[in-house]
Length: 286
Image 1 (cartoon, one colour):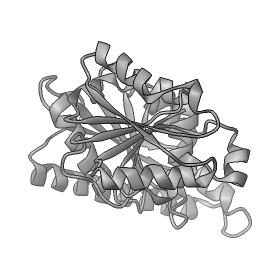
Image 2 (cartoon, rainbow, N blue to C red):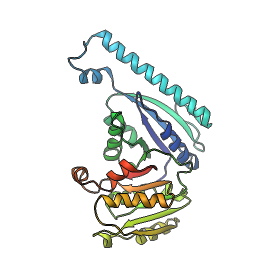
Image 3 (cartoon, rainbow, N blue to C red):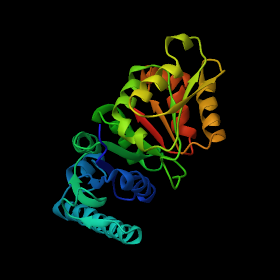
Image 4 (cartoon, rainbow, N blue to C red):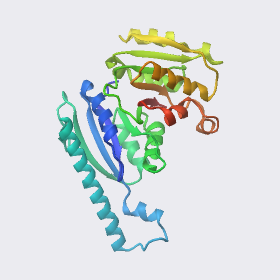
């Protein structure tokens, strides 16, 4: 699958700069289009959440609409300034297919349906690590992972200058990890180095890192197989992140939520640990 359309969803009060940087560092070698979608609730959604707290009159609705317009204008101006700094063409619609460019759209409504539809006509959704101070970030990640059907790149504290310098794949043979590999072959082709890490747990013999390396070789991707001697539980996630640090990985790729989300929440898990602690970007699919 080609990665030509990268979606960066944003909202009032959200700074997308790190995600734009990640999109550009992926987009340039792939000649990908960076689509920035500004998503803001309409007056009816804002008022629904404030029922009984403010008068539902024309003045209130006008004030909400004015605030959204001002936020959108500020966000678009910030995107234009970023494009100017980075030498990226800013287009209101389409651009050249042999160069990376950015587009801007404004959408009104709830995050989940807006991002679901926008993500399904994109190849990759780039989101922030969830931040309790900004509910949009958590809603965007959940929607991207569980409703869109495309790979999701979660950007954490840092964005390596070369995201494709060393991609480390956490492999366990799960359906989620398999989908991620199939949807990310083009990206893996561009990686300077690929390492497949498999943790030795009670289900270790069901899938081996060497088997995935053999599959990737048929696609022209040379990968190194590494086995981690750890036990089951949250320590698996910690061991994978530690290995990524030791090997200077620029991106971690793993399937998302192999078990039910309730079990992941109660027991921890590799995905949750990576979401909460990974410093490098994490590529996921469900």
